[in-house]
Amino acid sequence: MKIALVGASGQAGSRILAELVRRGHHVTAIGRNPGAVAAGPLVTPVKGDVNDMSGLAALLRGHDAVVTSVRFIDSDPQVLIGAVRASGVKRYFVVGGAGSLETAPGQTLLDSPQFPEIYRAEASKGADFLKALRAVDDLEWTYLSPSALFVAGERTGKFRLGGDQLLANADGSRISFEDYAIAAVDELETPAHVRARFTVGY
Image (cartoon, rainbow, N blue to C red; front, side, top):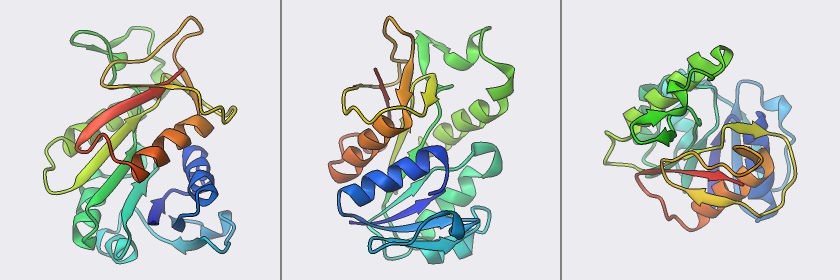
């Protein structure tokens, strides 16, 4: 496939880029600093601005799918969704947040009194992004939430998938960027959660 990846130099984005290349997909790596991404036979770094709807739409045009892996507080869901719509690309994959996942019926991780204040603004914006996507019926969108701890680690290929509930085991709620990337590219290759949110964890 030909994938447009916005935010390809970030923690999650760089792992998704590596996973896409590992599987032979062509990637247009879009970011503020394209020099942070190494060009290669399958990778074309391009400068782009997530807040420039028309400029971004022009960069996205002609791809099979768009992936955005950007900080929610630095972007606007309506601008990103609008850019994807204007590009004519139907498949849209969003690297989501964990804050909107349910820890009990009617209760989200964000509602927890233990939720770290340092992450609250970003997590709240992530929940707003998911809400905006759920009103979209003209794109084949997917929002993949990581577990509570989203960290550098190993590429094991051993993880669980879930829906709207936070996944946890005896060691807590965690997923590596590397294994998240596997779940993300699996979904791009074989869509199983179209117009839906799902989650991945150990």
